[in-house]
Length: 276
Image (cartoon, rainbow, N blue to C red; front, side, top):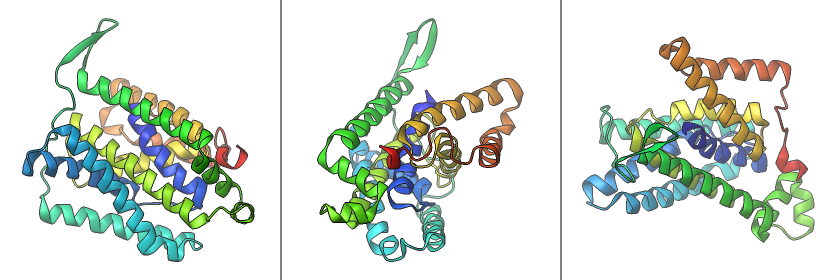
């Protein structure tokens, strides 16, 4: 079930690269913002977890949009500068939560408490719900990208900004939509992850590394590649933790990353956005 969550995070990461051609190293920190927004909403403001999730979606999406408009937009033609700025933003966000919340993990209420039995296996209802919701969001995103006017404009921008401009598409607006969408997805993923684990200032690091491995494996810029990559990486992570050594969690994905970069750097599906 965790693979669906990985896919949700990785798709936002690959959308920004596929359309804008830049790596957003603050994507994991955006996930953290989403988780702590839900934490504040439920613990300090007394709101329900569903309103907290909605707040996380809005706040994380707006943060990502402001990050793009305030910094990335001006240097988006300089990939190294984008990586440095998003890394600095990520560190600043982590330090903000260290100062304001502390280093101890915080609990986020479950979206749906209880347990259920599926095929003889007992699972937390919350995990099953986040699995279903993750897939609904992924499916909705695929439909939006392929069948709405804005989605098609994003695809056109990913193929060629000059070509898109010739048919009247404003590339800057498409980049903004992409960052906004990726941030909202990361915010929701942060709530999902925090609801069946905990929220902490470092919680975005692991998903960011996994996202990088997933999108490289699936093909940078490919949504379907990210989904397949998430399930392959997720299966590998569970296998290593369950049957090899739990302390090696995270290492397997890095090994996959290195192997793919050496053997098949274009990944399984290449740049789907550029080919659609």
